[in-house]
View 1: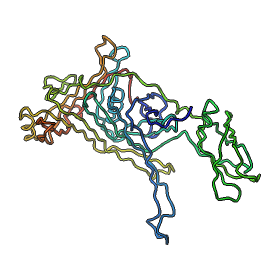
View 2 (view 1 turned 90 degrees about the vertical axis):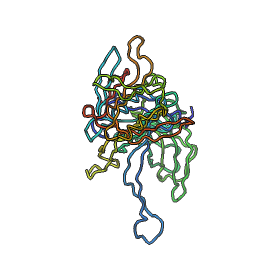
View 3 (view 1 turned 180 degrees about the vertical axis):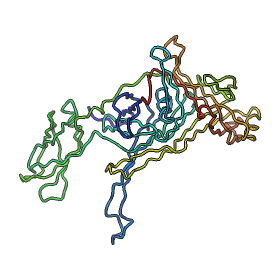
View 4 (view 1 turned 60 degrees about the horizontal axis):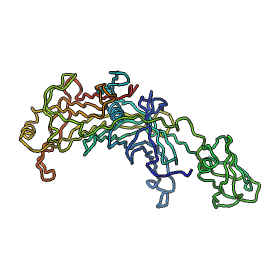
Length: 428
């Protein structure tokens, strides 16, 4: 089977349990997620050149690897509770879970005051299967939750220390120039069949004795042995003197390359969502308030942790960063409503004394028929201040676009989140 380089053939798995220490990969509690195209992490390499020095020439002559970090985005336009709970747990840093019915769990997420946020491990496959990567030391820098046309959508901005393992390697093998076989130093080549192993050898090249020209060698066979033996169609040269063959290939994969299974969850639908303002949260439920869903034109929630990823003079000799510190957490709401009255305008005029609570109730299907528990979450913000409420036009309808700041209410740190699904826990 030929390799498939379509992005849709890739996979991404994350590990719900936090790393014991920053950058120490997690091996349990993994789950594969159905994420939107464009999701994934990338390595941000810091490569410097010497153009800032006096060298007697104009162009660069040397490059220096100064280290690396990681970043990327994970998103679901049809958000599911597992992804939502994982993102919010790692963003806010604190979660408690309990079983409320057989196989059904409730998770309460709250803001942690700690400045060293929990980190998680992510594994991704590019295509099927060009390469696989394991990134450890990842943190949730920010998130966005939106009520779309049909679904609740969610995306997470991820920053990482840049610790990355791959399933590919580059090896130099010293063999006589007239040889038709190369034996790798220690590795086998990944693949159950001869055709798969052949596809997993990407390139073999060498320079003949006394030559400065690379010759790319055609590989006709790869043995199933460990170490593997590669058969070449023709020799590079006629000399029996050893030359260096450079081999790019996929060695037999380590255990982390095996992807965990997915979970079957209901996505969260717009028609099952409610937005309630000006209610009172008593620690268990929201009492009173006004359901504004009928006049709602848009709703989005954004959070940002203002992470600082730093390298330290710690003698580690590692190219990745050593520390991740959370800055001041920010949470904001954008609320667009039909302009039916002047209530929100008056509140905006008296922002110093007028605050309101916001309760977002999102649901999917019933977890188990007759259980009374639904896939979903309640996101409660007991105290929000109005930063601005400009009058706008949505289509041909007058609207009030509210920019709200989530504030500390004195009891819950400004945020109280409950979610329900069939996952026993997060951050454990």
